[in-house]
Length: 165
Image (cartoon, rainbow, N blue to C red):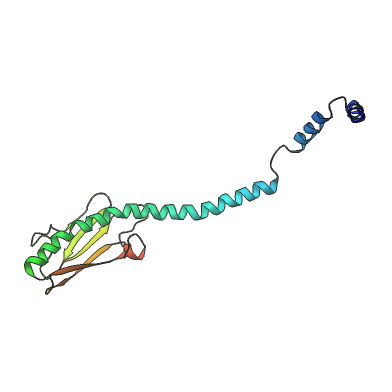
């Protein structure tokens, strides 16, 4: 009983509602974030953006360059057939031996495709951060004994990491 009298007296000193006043006082003191908390949040977002944005742009260039790779890979079968028929790559040129003719002024991402002695060179159109020097070159090596054709990838697309070489 003694305890209840003390609470009653304490409550009367604060207008009968001491807990409400303390809670209200805390609410007034904590209205938002401190400047330090905001600066830390901004720094974290800036670090994430510094990593994510360049990765995103590189990913976009690689996806644009995939059309160049597909165009070059489409010529591989023609060159392989020519090498099998002739047992050599010397006469495997664009427009001969069943290989489609070389062309320039292409549409989309591909500017030109040429085949000379079995070497396929695809030149992209300059757009979306891809330059015309970012070529995709497929060089065949034909083993006349085993009749196996292997390909080596090179060109500006390799040095700029648009394709695995």
